Image 1 (spheres, helix red, strand yellow):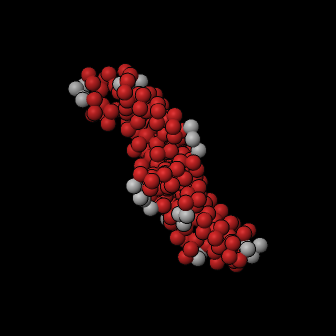
Image 2 (cartoon, helix red, strand yellow; image 1 turned 135 degrees about the horizontal axis):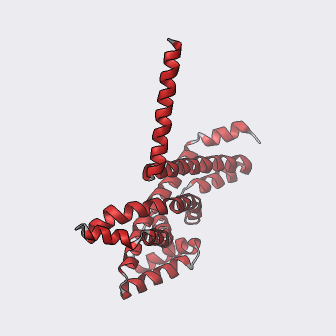
Image 3 (tube, one colour; image 1 turned 45 degrees about the horizontal axis):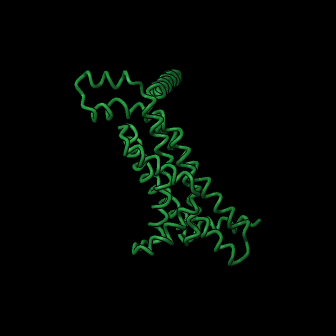
Length: 241
């Protein structure tokens, strides 16, 4: 293994572009997937027959077929109906639709975990259903669904490698193309792995930060720690004097 070659790959424009494309794919697909999942979860909450039927069909379709199949299907079939999209847009669309099916179940479970008594109390205080969902249900559900959503976020980052089959220049495709040119697969894939680990580490840190922000107990614990640190710092300063 050549460490110099790995460092060269890590700082090369092609690998940086591939990492940026992977990150952009992940973030765009996650945002759209969460929006789709939230809409589906709210439709399920409404408990209308048509809405429930449409949601069940959607979940059955996108959870029952492989992600790779969905990517290839959207990229190859849509043009036959006159819908011509770029490879990147097809990739985001496929990943978002797939992610929405899983996010819908995660968000639905979070919404149902909030007790009915709290909803009733919100309505009794004069809130509309929209205000009750916004101020009572969603803040509590967000703390519940954040850990599984964090897992989905990391999973989406790794699933983005599948879009290389439709020639989207994400990180894995760049690594394979680079390795094919000089047959240094170990170094090229090691560089790609380092990028993936760096991005997943950043996502995990972001998840921990959000959990701290949304959880009052963790916020109080952090405040107590910071207060203790300040007191220790003051004591040390007085001791020096």
